[in-house]
Image (cartoon, rainbow, N blue to C red; front, side, top):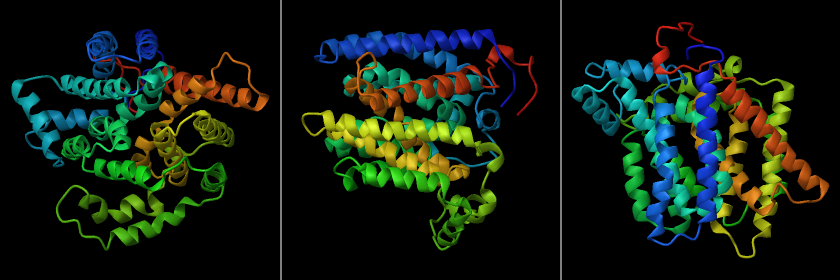
Length: 391
């Protein structure tokens, strides 16, 4: 990433985009019983935030861990340093052949993500009021940093609706597209399907909370060295996943632990614990408030719980963090369900209100202020040449 410090145009673009997503979410929620004719209106109203998101995220520069790498890859696509999946390479070569500048490709990545997110919420409109802006906050950092992974993940977002409906044909089509962009998305899809098939009801708090606390405060990440030993015995042939097994000692040994970048102070860890356990508890209670068994809500809740617990187990190991990121970002949808069942302007028992305050405070202080407004890299393509410090 390229360090810039505070920039007013970045602040203004974030405020406009975030407000547009809030308005968009409220519109979808208000008209959630859309008939087929009004669905055309849904996409009409989604047009402005989709275009805005595409422009703001697509025209960024140097923001995100992998940005400069993929810029370099595109500019050298005819003699690539690393061979990548077929569809991803085909798209890059097509853009390069036409003569499009590299940032048009980043606009495509951004548009694909926001379009597929919008498609998901068109299927689950009762989550949209809170879910659309919160899912943006949950996912934007990953979309900027893990560019190819999230480009592939975008095509899996609709499966979050199709899997609980057991509509396997669209799931198969989408996973085939996704793995042709990033093979590791197969792992994500297996996790999605596995969570749905294994957990028929919401994961009980007496299981989830102790596991979370164990992996957060007791577990020693250096114990993951056994993964390298197992993967060294696996032969995956010549596909992209084979690179992970061939370099297992590099990716999964104790030496791969990145405490410099991912380590947290005691207060930061405690604050994250309060936030995530509040979602565990209120998410569980909100499902219990449903009159009928809400399979969709249970599925989202379990994905987040498994993601949050696993995230703690591998927090300082980047390659495994990337595996569980797609599950962890589901917190935006789970919190949307919580705020639907436990409205912020209602009076509740102190422990409920306290957890609501924790969630809201953490979202504002961490996901909005720290992870957006105060991020060190706030460049757009028109700033090229004005900033040179790489961090």
